[in-house]
Picture 1 (cartoon, one colour):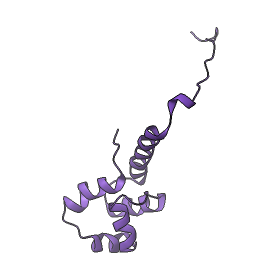
Picture 2: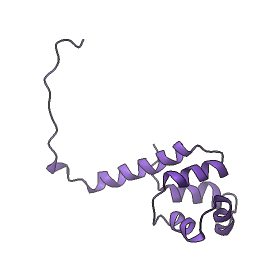
Picture 3: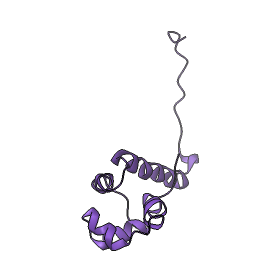
Picture 4: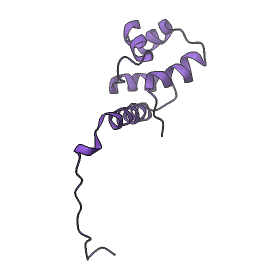
Length: 98
């Protein structure tokens, strides 16, 4: 699964690959240049609204954009969680399950 920030993915797969200016991208998305540059710089998270806008501009579903963000969020969380502080439940095996 992809674990890069969606801004990095957007930059590498579209902006850089197709030589799209930040200004043109902002204009087509209907977002401010500041928001677009913050996303590309990985300073902000991708929102569902941004994902829908990206879906309308590029041939990639809003859900897939959000999956990139979710994978990135989980990767970051795994780096922060101290596993020594978490105690999982251990349930007995159920007799009715084969």
